[in-house]
Length: 126
Image 1 (cartoon, rainbow, N blue to C red):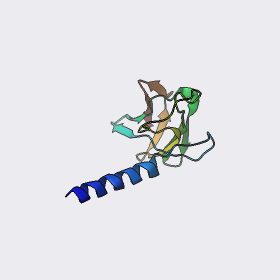
Image 2 (cartoon, rainbow, N blue to C red; image 1 turned 45 degrees about the vertical axis):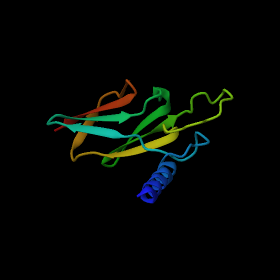
Image 3 (cartoon, one colour; image 1 turned 90 degrees about the vertical axis):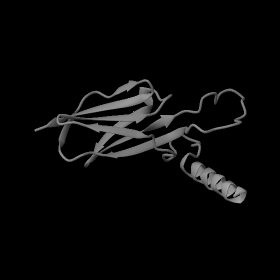
Image 4 (cartoon, rainbow, N blue to C red; image 1 turned 120 degrees about the horizontal axis):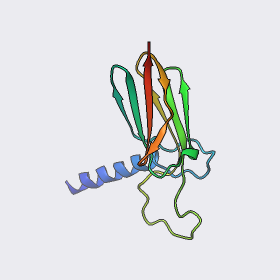
C-alpha cells in the first residue's frame, strides 16, 4: 500500500510539473491555463476566470470563432529579490485559456478584474 501511495504522489508531481512549469520569458508559450466558471441565463453568459495577482495590463481577451481566448502573464513575485524558491505551487508565467461559447451571438461588456478574477459578461443579441 505504501508503494502505491508513493507511486500516486510521483505521478501527481509529474503531472503538476508538466502543466504548471515556470515560464522563463514573457514571450514564452503559455505554461498554464487559469480555471474558468461559466454561468448561462436566457439573456446573458457570465464567465469568471481565476487569475489572482494578475493586473489588467497583463491580460488580453480575444474573440475567435465560437470562443473567447484569455491570455496574459502572471509574474513571479519577489523576482527582483535574491530569494531562493523553497516551494512553488501557484502557477506563474504566461497563461492562455480558450473558452468555447454557447451557440448564439453576443455583445460583450467591458471586462472587470475584481478580487483576483476576470469577469466577462456577454449579452445575447437577437
